[in-house]
Length: 272
Image 1 (cartoon, rainbow, N blue to C red):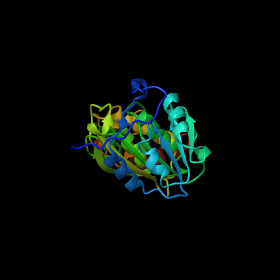
Image 2: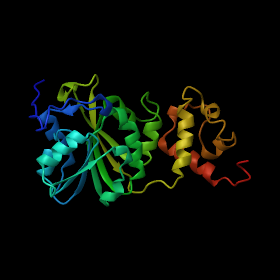
Image 3: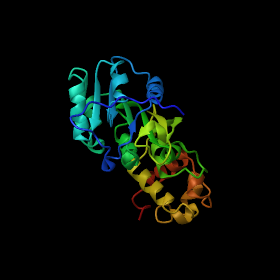
Image 4: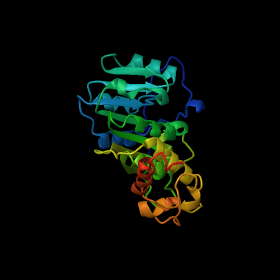
């Protein structure tokens, strides 16, 4: 495969990728162009890029929108971006995306990012806290994480991440990206995923849902009546119309929502 490489972003000194930040810089122009094409950014949209790095996506995004927010934890890269682009075009937020308040940027936010592998899962869960202000997210992930994110019930990849994120977002795995498209090349393939918040999010206690799903998949080899014995009384399975002899991976997202609603609706006396 021929890789079209980006020129290096001007820095005061050569920038070596930092392992502690999980840095793998996108260097293939064709991959960048394909990502921009699926995002299809428009001039007046509110867009935030997580981990802009050396600007592989930043530059083409700025060619299509009037202003861009970026979140960069690496101070050297953040400084280089401020030197390269004007304040009118680019706002650089220096810090950890895991601690960033996305609601600061307003409503109808479009999120873009080549997410560092070491924080991708907790960052995806953080997106659920801001589903009400996010229009969509196009993110690059480790292929294994992308497959778990979009997995269907009764598949090997289906688990806690699948249920919790699919309860808030529609998720589509768009295409894979080979290791050679990055510098340094990671040991695994990557994938680009599109996420969009559900138009009508389910009415459920998400804290309780998370407790149920975590308990179930921490014992995924057990049948439900055993895996969730501490949370779900035996008489509940008939009410929610779920076979307690199934295993956690056999339940749909809606099944887990049903269990959470059942437990939420029980009176205090019933929970004793």
